Amino acid sequence: MKKLMRKIVFSIILALAVLVLSAVLGSAKIPLANIPGIISHKLFSSVLDPEIDKLIADIFWKIRLPRTLASFMVGGALAVSGTVMQSVLRNPLASSYTLGVSSGASLGVALVIALGISLSGLGSLLLPFVALVFGLATVLAALGISSRFDAGLENQTVILTGMVISLFINSILTIIMALFRQHLQRLVFWQLGSFSGLNWDQLMIITISVVPTVIFLMTYSLEMDLMSFGEEHALSVGIDLKKTKLILIFLSTFLTGASVAFVGVIGFVDLIAPHIVRKIFGSSHKIVLPLSFIFGGTFMALADIISRVIVAPSELPIGSVTALIGAPFFTWVYFSRRRSQDAGV
Amino acid sequence: MLEFKDVYAGYNGRDIIKDINFTIKRGESLAIIGPNSCGKTTLLRAAAGIIQHRGQISLSGSAIDTMKRRDIAEHIAMMSQINHVHFPYSIYETVMMGRYRFLRKNLFGRPGPQDIKIVEETLEKTSLMDIKDKSLNILSGGQLQRVYLAHTLVQEPELILLDEPTNHMDVKYQIDVVNFLKDWALKEGKAVVGVFHDINLAMELTDNLMFMKEGRIHGMGSAQELITSTFLEEIYEMDIVSYMVRSLERWKKFEEDYE
Image: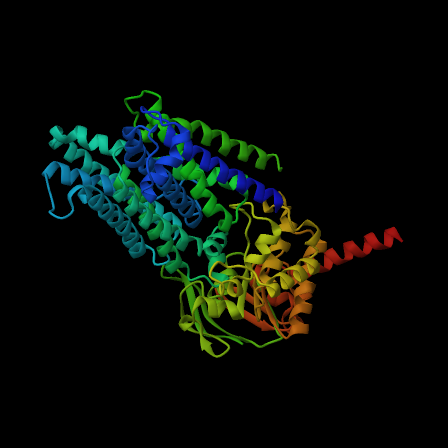
């Protein structure tokens, strides 16, 4: 227990360190010593230290801090979503993306961009709103079709239906992109994902969407533990399997959908976070879920630092950075675990 | 406590078990025996309310298809064959999960003193206490089955359904587990319905036998009433009694040679 506590404390310290690093690093360097003064000035209207450049204070408060917190929140949300999907569907490669959330969101965004749709009142929130609605609608369609073919909603049916719908939507997306080539760049840029330009209002919407959902999902830890032993087993201990599965899939899709809506399609975090967290902290979801959130958030904040520092003042697409770090890391974690299991240790 | 009345059940619209009628009372056990694909496991799954059925399955007077999953779990626990461990939980965590219907009363599923007491007593009874922190993925098949037995017992059901409960265990554990459950049912006024391939092991659990063939009950009663060459030949299409007698003579000869 003490060992576990030490690991948890270390993870929290690591997360805080990465958050601080993310806040100070970038094309404009922000001295660490200035941060408390800036926060105090912005939050409590205290007088700003004359030695602190006002421009630097504004960059920190209006750009860097919301971006840092948003990257942590989105990373955490994607990681929790992946953890839930892998447990519920008993598949180490399952994620909301498998069920079509990114394809649906991309289709929605493509339609808005290609047809030049605008809705008064939504303003800059139009794309996130459409992406979320289309992403959720796609997964709901996958669940609806699965349920029609298989009343028990078995995992294989859900995964296969999700994949087929994803492929179907991707083909529509390709047609739209071919027909409206003039908008191709904007759509591709959206799909690549970015935290640039995120402000406090958007961070607030992300936080309000993510935090209560993650807490609610944590109340289902026990069900996720039991569902990982198989559907028949979960039923026999008294879980209302179909209802629980629908709730969990919907909520984890919502987490991914809310993230994709604001920052585009960012892969790998949802895939690797659950594997790494389980390797370090064991299997119990009451530990795995909150730690996946912390790990995913830390990983994403780190990837975001790399994306904006490595070719500053330009930026690399965040999705490619997560994949570049994530792919070799995941391969190492996954296969070292399999080797140790094969060796019976 | 469990009653099947004209029950038909199966998968994808095809009936695997047909016209099943029987009743199990508290303190009674039943061993279901039959060749492969005769519908034994399907019968158990129907009894657990896991698959759809036609006809009437009643649990303590209520129709099982009108009951909530958690209410069914108060009466019935199913000990299934789980050969693949998806995540390596510890033995203690796995057994504690068997308390689901009690733990669920707490929002975050936190175990109370009573849950901890019952889990620890059960770990002692099933000889798992000393290895309670070991991970499931390093256990032998026999140890794994004992973990699931403990997991099933802490659910505190009135009836345990055993699907091929002992096929990963050596002979000692097979007999131990069956005797353990027999005592559990007798002492606590509970019931066990088990599926067996081994007729001898089935008789170790109970004298109340059900033989199945091609989805139907072929005979139900005591071993004395049922076990005849003709009856078993109808089911297995071979002379099982002669085989058993030959085996027994072989064992006797080993014993005599040893003496």
